Image: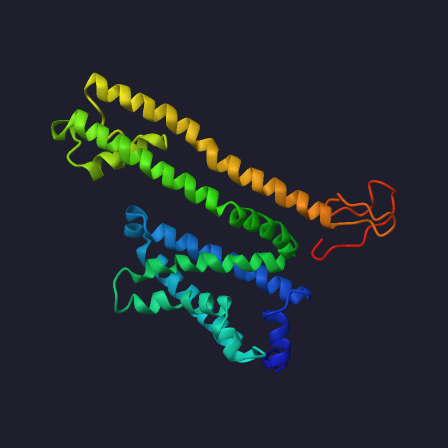
Length: 273
């Protein structure tokens, strides 16, 4: 049969250039999202009590479908070992294992949330791989600012330890600050402006320290943002400087620029643009 031909299956299952390949991947993404929806509904007690049998049947249906798809991928892959060891190969296998493991290990079925990772295939289907360059720019910016961020978090750790220790001394166990680690926990949720309210200072001095901690939290939020933004700006300017017009040899062009902003000459296309 034509559809059992390995080359045909490979073109449909692994390729996105043909209409059949695009339909297959889009259909697969829809099925993955539906299976995640079934899993979410199954985690809701009232829904599970009323539709438990239906959800169980649907889950096994999805699992058998994904098992068949994984088998076909292994069957038609140009290099089976390479596919099985690849990122998508491992994810495809993990997408079907939890249902079978749930037979022996109750609760293992909720590991099927890993199926959501398979939606990453949409980057292939919708031709979004050209945005990888932008992602690489962001990663380079984070890498360049890693030391500044490390210094920032080290300083932040010292601050929360200091404020936590102060509150432990001022408030004491009678007001919920039973230990320095507990007080540091309070300082972290306060300085990050989360404020769960499970531990609150009761004395005037403790509340004054808490007020300073809260105000400092608002100021601290802007620090890592500024660090990363500055590095991102430098990285973008560096990329612009690397693009030179072949006509006038002037730089400073955006990566996706098609014409020179100085002489109007046509720019050479960049990879992924």
